[in-house]
Amino acid sequence: MSTYDTRQRQLKSFWKEGKEGNDGWRTKAKENKSFYKGIQWEKTDVDILDAEHRPHLTFNHIFPTVNLISGIQRQNKQDIKVFPKKGGMKELADVLTAAAKNVTDESNGEYLTSMAFFDGLVTAKGWLGLDITYDDEPVNGEIVMERYSPFSIIEDPNCENYDLNTSKYIIRTFWWDKEAIRLAYPKVKELNIGLDAIAQSEPDDVQTISFETDTYQDATDDETKNPNKIRYKIRKYFWRTYERRSFLINKASLEVQLINKSRMDEVAAIMKSKLGSGWTIQERIIPILHRTTMVGELELEHEDNPYGEEISAYPIKRFCPYWIDGDPLGAVDNLKDPQRELNKRYSQLLHHLNHSANSGFIGPEGWEVETKEEVAAFASKPGANIHYKLNKKPERIVPTTLSSGHLAASQYGAANIKIISGVNADLRAEDTSRSDSGIAMQERKAQGALVSEIIFDNFRYTQQMFNETLVDFIRKSGSLTDIEIKDIAINAGVPEFDIELLKHRAAGKYGIKVSQSQHSPTTRLSNFSMLLEAAKAGMPIPMDVLLEMSDIPNKKEIIARIQQQQQEEKQREDIKIQSQANAMNAKAAQAQNQGGPQPGGQSPGA
Image (cartoon, rainbow, N blue to C red):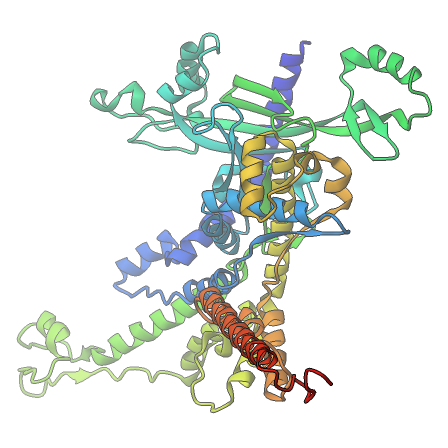
């Protein structure tokens, strides 16, 4: 069997395994999305209630709960930060920080990151990715950051680790029209025939503007059957294999070079002439990243090491708020039952009140009034007049009194949502009856946030993996030219930066650490409270340090203004000191010229 056939069979098994393995999550995720949007009743239940003329109310407490947790993240956004681990690496760390910040800024990375966090809260999975686009940079390409819909990614369902670098594959899907596919892959033989065949054999991989299934949409009339409006589902497979490869290693400098298989004899001969020079050849088993683009079972493109030979990590990173041995959970999953209970109890209360207001009448046989329909419709209105014959008076049916248990049960759903989510009254700022100090209120909010701290901890881990891969793209993909690196270095305040340092393996592995600033609301607020109390006690803590730890809006601009004022005051003080010194020198010179006493009380001839 050829390599191509083997690859096709393997990718086909990935697709089947991934779709089946993620079906359970997909069903729950769609329901979670509906609950967040306020669509919380089953259609069959709605039909029954409508037929019985009974209400079906929705009081969406999930909506503000998710928004509050998302808001905490949005108020504590992170910037990637590269720190030097040893002396001499500060310049490299500063340049990498500036380069990474440039990528995220150009891609509107703060918003994409917040959207991925929100996706995770609702569906249990949020996705961030990196790619190299050649739209504006046709030669070397440009690194871009992307956020993917949770429903567009299919990952290996057998991977039990949070880090997907241990999984067999990740599949990203997206829709593309026929003309775009033709332009992007002009060298694919029989492309048009293959696309037409897909519409017949694999309807899930085609869609048009009028009818949609999971992967296919087809027009229903000849007028809309425009081939340019037909879209095909593109499957982009990221998958890894393992190979035994040879490396040329300098033990002194830790420089590593991958040896091309075709040059092994040539390298071995060179090594013999350099015995004792510190170089050696070693074999290692390493992962190889592959990227295969397909539509249906038609292969459009296959690439080994698509981002460079030294990048083997998947460029797509997943965020799950809760992760239990392969099972992801979002913030909505455990809130649906109390939300259903809340909706049903309030709907029953309203139904009971409606029937209490117009509970109906009872009368003897042959009861004749204006009409029974009029009594049923209007007897609950003020001033209703009912006429009846002698000795045949209708009697109102006394409604059952609303039990206290029903009223209490209607409150349980809302209370359980707060208990389960951890978003308590202090976090919601609902309790306005207390007169506690601001610090005490902040501490209660911080304690309430502890329940959701695991969510932020997992998100930190996702951001850490993403940032490390981004730095690898900057260092190893070759997308940044020397001129671009020089410009970034100048903007970072490192005009004499050595470009070779950026690509040096030992410097990248042992000289720097990729991280991010604190974003835990609990930790930050606690630190701010301690600093504030220390400042009140008389400790000389600079104002800009206090502001940096706070959540005051526009704090960067305020800190910049303060620093500017401090510089201006220092300049004025320096000028004042210099003026005083000049005055003293002038006075001393004048005294010397007049033969008077010198500074210190001595005469010139003393």
